[in-house]
Image (tube, rainbow, N blue to C red):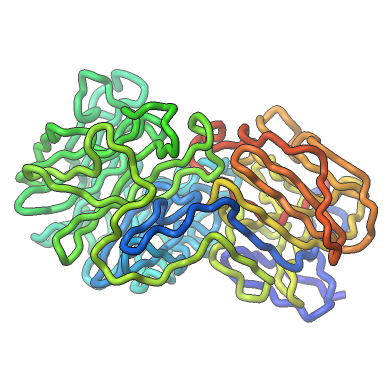
Length: 560
């Protein structure tokens, strides 16, 4: 037997095994006196179901980056566009996406892809990396970001947006949502959301601040300037002014911010000033993007619009990316906040995305750019040959106790003693669900060492909201966790005895708020249901802190 060293695969490097070579953990953590069970997955496949038709010629379809891609920031460099989005406690983090037409996007890397860059150990899923902002200056790419409960504000740089990105430089200021602006006079500035200058008057009372940044010392200067206190109309007690960006257009400095919180009241607002440090005056037409004034019972709803960033094209047009959701009922979606695209119209020197009462369109006229190549996220299959796609992510940092190893055309998952409901490191990696209805299918070969050992699929929103389906001992089980009071591996939702000893194929069919588990012996033609359809609306992001979206993939667990 070959002993595999303490390998942290996910997002870093695949440990390649000779064909047929068994694997086990080299070291055991506290209370882990016996070798972990190993589950071997032959493939993982995703298929969108009931997906909308392609947009007509000359048009594009929203969202342009579907599934769990919130807080988008964008930069144009020549004919190329690069975007980055939030990932919270997922690793690798801060995906970098590339496009040449603003419509078709491809993941080219992750800015946080080495365990030494950031430590998410013990953090809840909704902590970690919030609202990155990307820019380009003097031949270098820059991202400023906040790591909540893991170091505060930091800066990373890269010569190539695909990476590698530098280790973080930690910045000496408080607050969140920083963005970096390089002024025409050679100065650099960071604008961000922080507490107001006086005692907050109400919950969610925030302010937008500006602080000069020294690109030589890679640190902010001590003095700061207040740009906005509260929001557009302080008399209404506006909440969560955040996500600020500055642009210089036709002699005006424009300050673009979000307001209203990241749920159904979310919005985008605009201010301007003749001077970089203000004073900034809000436009008469605000917010310039929201859906909160539309009927809640309208069909084909887009909700929670805001947190935008904008770019100008050579034809003079302006376009913006922003987050929004596609609820299947109420404010419920399993997809989390996604990235949408809209043009801006300028009226009397002010930009706006939509007129009052105007709905975000799912289909719009595409930008005046040559059609580019992108990713077809409606279907993919991974046969686990190295290297793994950068699309695979795991919760928190790789650790020594578990390993996910690629070899002999399979993914070998050493079962961990951290359940999906813990704040440890589950033996799990997955990919984003990107469509309201989709099938996730895999093949697993598992010989459990004890009746409590589990291997199969995990559909994970956060540690208190997930669905697990697979083999547990000598039976098939569906486990659901919808609140912190339930056991960490999830409450039993369905089970049945397993009637075969060989490899299994598993399918999780998600149809908006319902999930049905299916299985069959590998090579069989007929899928067999396990239990009834499970109501997974309680997993929706609105019940799980609003920030993340569902991630699904192979998972193995051994009860200690």
